[in-house]
Length: 316
Image 1 (cartoon, helix red, strand yellow):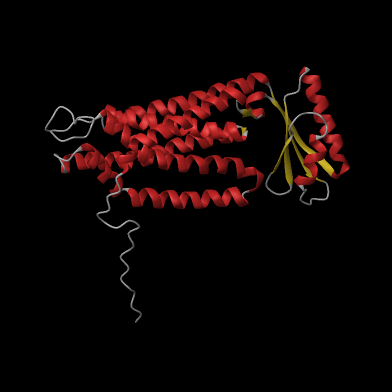
Image 2 (spheres, rainbow, N blue to C red; image 1 turned 90 degrees about the vertical axis):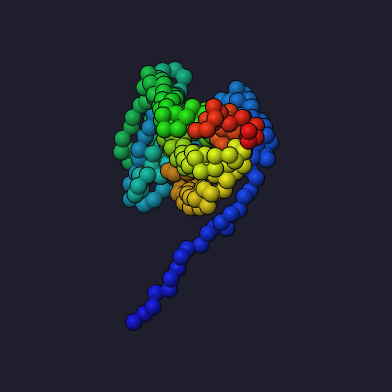
């Protein structure tokens, strides 16, 4: 018989480790405030690079007549040289190519001319599969829907945290979520990543990932509030973060590895989505440790034996 070794697992961080995160909470909050300000400045200076989902335009799907896979890098210079702005090419499943043409000034006739010119530039080597138009009314509705989705999700998350814990936990979580969204959107603005519905989906996913981390930490804080009733709040927050640190770091590393693979090898279809997700996961992991908990330490939190723990975290 083969003996299976008794493997009990490995602790990424040793038991009893106590990294003093609260000692640097002022620096972290100040650095995060700077990031938010830079993001706002970038948004005000150059805005977002909205795709045709939000600005309107045309989408053309084509396929090579011989069934071979087209070289997108060879097509981009030709199509972008037509004078219709930045034309986006995306490799779909199989050999199909999706071409996005931004909204052209001059109405529907100008948009039709742009589509015809693109098809003519591709030549007889390509056959047209389908052509669609995203009008200004549809793009405006998508913009409003995307904004409402982000706002509604944050309100729902805040209400859930408030109901499950206390308002101080909800305030810390919401501040962390606002930080995550603004920091990620600021990076999108600075890099001029094309914003389409997949980017909105990425932002919503980032909110879910970030709040998951925040709930895990908040749950441990609530448990320790009952267990260590006389411990200063800052030390209790450090204890709670350290006790969940292995889970936070290992989950983040596993997610980052997957997203990094998609960024490097996912192609045009997934690159921007994966990049935004990658940045958002890193920012969300940071905020669950250095934003949500420090805000809770500043606001204070009620305990069973007193009205509220002093915000300074000093025991009475």
